[in-house]
Image 1: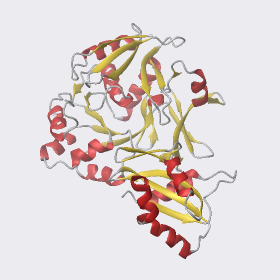
Image 2 (image 1 turned 60 degrees about the horizontal axis):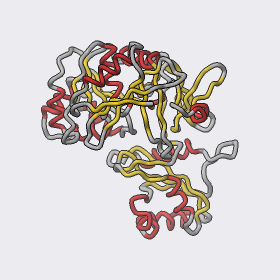
Image 3 (image 1 turned 90 degrees about the vertical axis):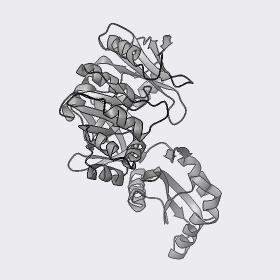
Image 4 (image 1 turned 120 degrees about the vertical axis):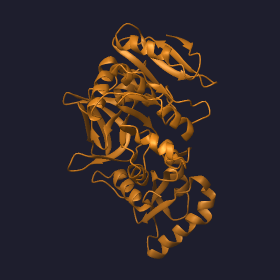
Length: 391
């Protein structure tokens, strides 16, 4: 059951702050924020049977289109906020430059409430522009200043010809970058410009970013299973999905007394404990803002003469955010056969696939396999990433 009201304008966050403050203090029901067709923010109060300390509901469609309403508790949000402040070496004032219906946007408000500071809201009525961001950044008055951006926003700011925009970016003690893979070249350009960027990894199910620059926040656990899937654990995990016990049970698992969230991502952890995210377990690749089904591209490739099997994934790309890449097993894996197949990448089959055509292709006699006989998705994703080189 929900009840809701429309905020009077896209810049008026007071109703959202009031409802969130009540929920975080245990004095009101959980809050869900969304946007109406005019772009106004809508505050809904949501009943969460069986979850007494629920504070926020973040609703997503998921890459398969299955609706998911992630329930975040007061305890998890408090742990996330404290861990963030510890990692960033302080609390401060936040600039909101992301939609409130997503966890990264909501967390700007939550962290502000825990810090006792007033967030400043960027004017997004004309979309995200360097001019609007610069104007908003200059309004922040706290000694410690933070914001959260997606890679596309950061690139747009760095590409701005205005020196005032770069100066505004430098005013932040930290600029959190998440929501999509950030190309190493983009991060290097930001740091060369004197911008203190921090990459984040997480999901609504972990109260947003809980891995900063590859390392887990305080009271956050991370591991990679035998097939390369990333699992997150610790104090920031969501209670589960509203009204979906089967989905909750399949996504949040307990092993040896530890509760884990099974992400949809592949990754690896090096000897120093740093996590590298290699790609998605599911098949959705967002390239240039367009969603491409990896499974569909695999199917199209496997229809080609001489193709035995195909693995398709998204790899980080400076130009596209993600680029489509493919590892293909060929019946004729001789140098001549591989050369002939790759010629079609920019020829017949590439033209047929159009926007879905892989920009990087590796061909061999068979797919890389794990000892258990399953495709080594992580190994192939890492190889394709290294071949693509972030282009």
